Length: 224
Image: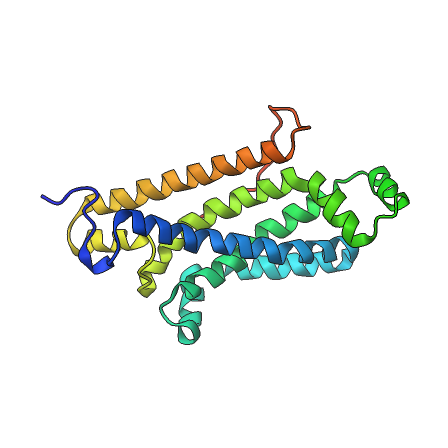
């Protein structure tokens, strides 16, 4: 009888290998999204008129179903990890840009004035004053984006991507092995919980001045 961790040979990876590939495809887009969102959010803070159209564009892009996004890209990037990671990067912006903008805007004017009086330029003030104070809001956005990304990677199995745990759901049907579906669902749930916990720990380490019971509101993002 096939076991819970007996992965079909057509996937060409062990269970641990699938986890590693799944995390790579899920977390790299979050990192890329953060690198894009940081300068974009700063532009929105400095140019207030830019924020509504940026928010509108990111929301419209998020509204595109992930499978449709994959199908459009597959002609250009093939059945590769890149086809999965590009849409996931775009999806993170709808969470990360507002989180960073809200966090940066929450910095008291007196703090900004003091930094300016000390000779801080716009870039230095943003990196050394505004972003550190905005860390709780940014981490809250990262938590939502990370958990969402971990779940969305599984959709890549529908286009033949071999790197994600979502392929176990496909093989569960092909080989009539429901334990593979349970494996995929439970593993992704555990990965999401662990990633969320690590981000909470990171927030605690980066913001020692915050009360231990303080919480930052999180925006709900529907599973696609």
